[in-house]
Image (cartoon, rainbow, N blue to C red; front, side):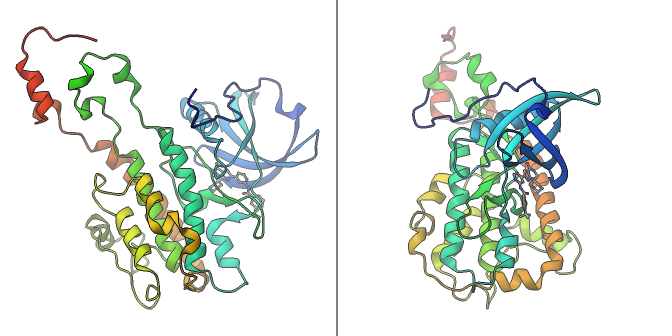
Length: 356
Ligand code: I85
C-alpha cells in the first residue's frame, strides 16, 4: 500500500441489508445530482443527520461510488459513512450515506455574509482548501471533471465550517490500465503517448479552478454573454481565444500574484496550463495566509447579480460538458508520426523486437 495515501474507510463492498434497518429516510430533498437525488436521513442508532444519495445501479453509478470511496481520505472531500445495495421497486439501487454538509454552497455563503467585505486573503484560503482536494484526487489519478460552485459545500454554518468537494458523477480514472497490462514494448523506448491516455482530464479541473478563483475575486465569471443570451457567438470566441480581462474597478486592488495564477490556470492550451502542483507551489496558494487583506467587490457583485446566478451556474455546467467531450477528442500525435529520438532508434532496430 502506498504510504503517502493512507486510505481511510476504504470500503467498496456495499451492505446488502436493508438501509431502513439503520436509517430513517425523509422526503427532504437536499439537491439533485447528475446520477441521482440527495435526501436527508437520520441514523436510527444515534439520531444524527446524514445526506443520502440515491443512485439507480448502473456501471456509471458504480464508478461514481467507487471513485468517491477512493477519495474520502481527504479532509476537503465529502465523507462517506455507508454504502448499501438494495432493491427498491424492482430497481437495484446504490445508497450512499454521506456526512451532512449543513453550511450550504460556497458562493451562497459569500453572498449571504453580513460581516464586512470578503477579502483577497479569504479568497486565497478558500482556493487553498479546494486545491488540497484537487491535488489529493490528481495524486491518485482521479480527475473530478465537474468542479463547479454547486459542488463545493460547507460542513457547518459559521466560521468553523470546512469546505468540501462532492459529486463524483463525472469523475474519471486518468491512468489507462489496458496499455500497461499488455506491454509489447521495451520500457526504455516507450514514447509517452504509448503509455498515453493521461489525456487532458486533469487540465479540465485546473481550468475550472481558474474560473472559480476568478469569480471568488470579483463576483462574476471571466467569460459571460453581455446580452443575457446563454452562449453568444462572441462569448464562444472569447473563450476559444482565451480573451478575458480583469476589468476595473473590481480588479483594481487585486494582487498581481492572483492575476498571474489565474492566467496560468486559464491558459487555453491544456498542455501549457498549470498542473495542480504548479498551482499549489504558487506564492498566492502556498502562502495564502500572507495574501493581502484587500477588500473585494465579490459580495456586492454576487448580491447585485443574484437573479443571474442560476444562469451562471447553468453556463458553467454546459462549459464543463463541452470540455469533457472536446478533451476526449484531442488526440495525441499518432505513434507513426512521432519524432521521438528514442523511438527513431527503436525503429532502426528492425530485428525481432524484444518483448517484456
Ligand atoms: N447537504 N450539486 C448541487 C449535500 N450534504 N449535494 C449536489 N450531487 C451530489 C446537490 C446539487 C451538489 O453528489 C449534492 C451532492 C451531495 C450533496 C450533499 C452531501 C452532503 C449535503 C448533487 C446539503 C444541506 C444540508 C443542510 C442544509 C443545507 C444544505 O445540501 C443548507 F445550507 F442549504 F441549508
